[in-house]
Image (cartoon, rainbow, N blue to C red; front, side):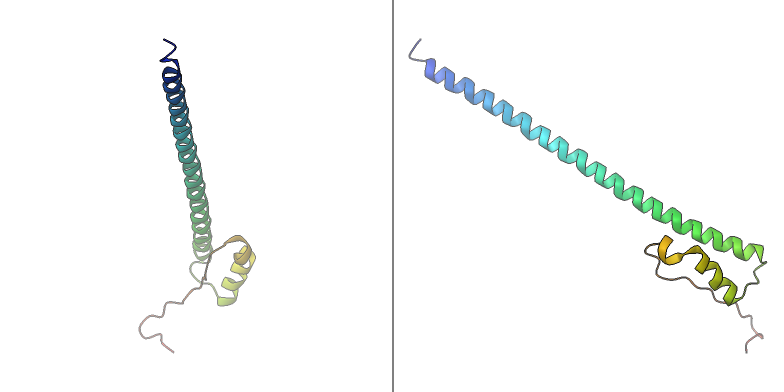
Length: 108
């Protein structure tokens, strides 16, 4: 019995070590998965918020044109967008503008 004790002790310690290493590996993998999901959810929420913000800007522009029956001057349009604070409130927006529809025969 004394002859096998070192071998049995080695095997027991090795099995315990392997078991602990396995638990540590799976815990690390789970933590990485949870962190990735949280980061992905945060990115998705930021994208959703930005899209909602830009859609609200489009809706407000539509409302401006509806309220004025489609008749709006360039200076009114500029004043409207200056009041919205495009540079401060709409990060990433590259530009906005409007073109007046010119029907055939109305050309200058």
